[in-house]
Amino acid sequence: MPNRREFLRNVAGASAGMFLLGHSVANAAEPSSQAGTGPKRREVMVGKRRVKTLDVHAHVTVPEVSDLLKGTPLERRTGNLPGNFDARGLAPARLQRMDEEGIDVQALSINSFWYSADRDLASRLVNLQNEKLAAMCATHPDRFVAFASVALQFPELAAQQLEEGVKRWGLRGAAIGGTVEGQDQELSSPKFDPFWAKAEELEALIFMHPQDSAHATGVSARVGGDGDLSNVIGNPLETTIFLSHMIFEGTLDRFPNLKICAAHGGGFLPSCKKTIKKKPSEYLKQLYFDAIVFTPEALRHLIAVCGVSQIGMGTDYPFPWTVTPVDEVFAEPGLSDADRAAILGGNMCKLLKIPA
Ligand SMILES: [Zn+2]
Image (cartoon, rainbow, N blue to C red):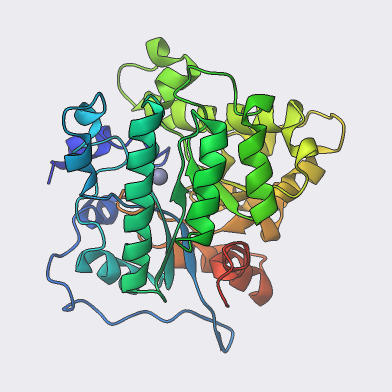
């Protein structure tokens, strides 16, 4: 277990908010290893109704990947991988945290680190990960679903991998980065249309999570020093650029039924006010966001701009951004019971095809 400072430094997948969160969150980075001894499962009620809660933003790793990658160019990225180093996997500590926080279902994802791999290696890695993700979900089918890994550097292959992930392995969509490591065309380029077409055809939710953002966005020279700016500026910036291209380059026009969920409240996008072919609010109907935005005012703004129907709960497990995701939804003023049930799990269960 790295110390807290290393732990946070390695969190490529997380975003702003560490400064706003207190001591209790620091403790939460290291949940008790004594599984089964914690408090019993929290059952979330809205009004008098038990609702199913879902965490759409939860990371996992596949330990067997280390062996597969030995002697390959990706070897150095195994082990303490950015955003992908939860060696606990589906250890009892994960279920314990879920039980304590009132999370019924986690939608597991692996942050993409293989976009530089050649076709053969990328195929073998993705096949292994998707098989293992399915096996993890099968251990607790009522508690976990997962997003497939895909080799987005080969869009046709990524489309096949998504299809196999959904049809063969029962995965619910795919997890992607915001670019192919900042090196290739934007994901709005027609080059990637085969992937978007397949996602639309399968009605598969695509979870976009920023990755190595300071590099990918070109701001790496500007975000040194204190404040973890590569994370708090770089990550939401990458998400913002990705979503903006998807709107302004017409990708969402070409695939009007494509559904994308962006991590950490979608970066800066919900504050954009440009007008293009359609009103921005119409594109927002295709975009979904997790509620990891750290303050009640930020969540209020996200809801006001995007609408209750576009938002789901997220924790960024195992990163210590929040341990009270359910309470944050209840603390938000002005929501009806139906609104709360939708954000707590209803919206994402529908998108991930989980019975409510
Ligand atoms: Zn994350």
